[in-house]
Amino acid sequence: MPIYEYRCNGCGHRFAYFSRTMSSSAEAAPVACPHCQSNDTKRLVSSFAVQGPSGPDAAEIAAEKAQAERLASITPREQIEKWRSAAKK
Ligand SMILES: [Zn+2]
Image (cartoon, helix red, strand yellow):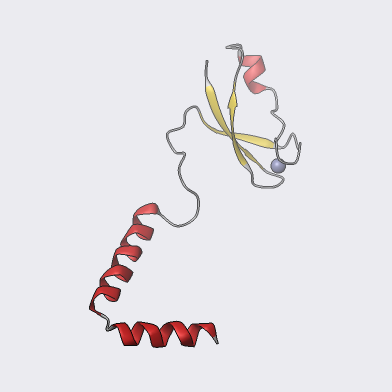
């Protein structure tokens, strides 16, 4: 069963569509957006190959987290407490 990924031009929602038929006419038929029910959708790819977390790259987030942890490990506890109390205000 072919799986297609669509993007809605109306609201930008991305969704996967499981085609129930192999016929090309059915593939060409518009697929309604599950988010806003718009028929203005565009087929992106024929697999989940490009699916992933939207927004910032996962590797980027991991690198940022590692950097924050490294910074915390070399920062005196008093300094961290000071930052924490400052952030609350
Ligand atoms: Zn939509």
